[in-house]
Amino acid sequence: MGLTAAIHYATAGKEVVIYDPDQSVVDAITSGRPKASEALGDVGGVFPCRRLRATTNFESVTDAPVHVVCVPSEKDGTPWMELVTQVLHRIAALRGERLIIVESTVTPGTLSEFSALPAQGIHVAHAPRRDWFAEPEKNLATLQRVVGGLTPECTRRAIDVISSVTPRELILATDCKTAELVKPLENAFLHVPVMLACEVAQAYPDLDVAQAVELACTHWRLMKIYLNAGTGGRCVQLGSRYVQEGSPHLAAGVLSAAIGGEQVMRETAARAIVTRVKPGARVLVLGIAYRPQFRDAGNSPGLAVAHALREMGVSPSVCDPMWTAQELETMCQLPVSPAAVDTFDAVFLATPHAPLADPRDLGVWHPGQFVLDAQGAWATQREEFAALGVEYKRIGDPGWLG
Image 1 (spheres, one colour):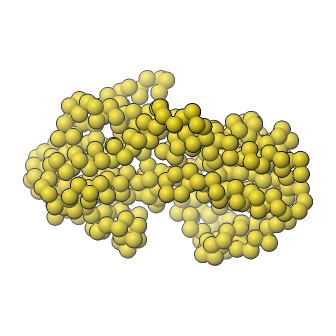
Image 2: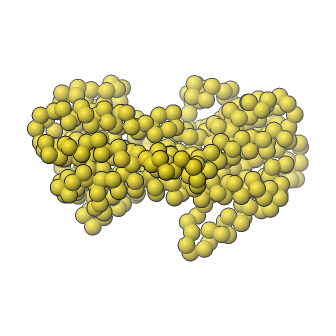
Image 3: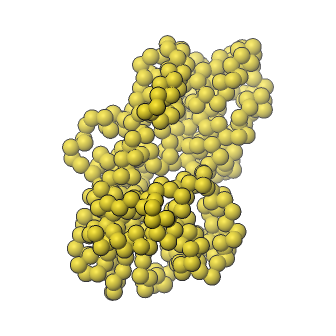
């Protein structure tokens, strides 16, 4: 988030300094090879740039009139506001008038702690992000942006700055408390129906729930929903948690059911595999990244199912072309295998990366193997699997639970 904001402001002609305490992050930016470059498209024209530099020295940014805060606000899969508030207190302790724009997703009510700052000339606004790294056209210059300050003056100042990269007609002004709720809520609006679809797939195991979900989503009021072994990524599932933690009145109900349903769905997917193999059987989990062609394992359904399989007495191995074998082993704490299905009793296709798109490229299949396809990427190969004596099911197929 911080890097893409910096690139946009520098491209717009602003002088930008990136502060990060991690020397390796700063070195990568300084060399023109930032760590996130594989998700940013062509950044060659931005680095090196006289208007954009990075430092590990906080004193180098203390004179900046505008601070954009993009620090992590989740830890171990749960909302974590400590770092956000620490950074705001650190900036607020500096002398002189300034504007702080918080882009990190926060629990509703977090910035109320700083309501006295505007009277001291320190203006605070929340402007959550919607850009999507996997699709470069969805960026700060093309998407609507919600901006809400602690006071109307805070909002005005934040919009003046943000409008240098986001057209004013795309900026939606509100108050700070409302802006804090928007980002978690828009993620929860996706999380809850996805988990409802997962619950229905478990409740009606003999019906074609996968097709029913696709057909239901053709209704003009509904967005497209994909069945999977729960949701993945650092936003969708956490959205429900941010909304829930901001109010004592949401301790139970729809959001709690969606959050709790994640673990149930992942264990159910693992059990669907275990019921078809012998104890100690070998299972290959293909895809640890939470989405295709994206190097991020945040809240990974594939990894969660792999760990559940191990707890249920089988021997899972993982494979993902987005990481090296050593990186995968360190991250997953599980055996790593190449994308070769020959020696496995079952295969779970969690994330269909392009190199995994055709099952015929993954070695020799043999009779008696079982395939569970999380998203239906191999559904067109049903007849070929059947001819080989391989049982194929996608999550939501009739009989997918065994």
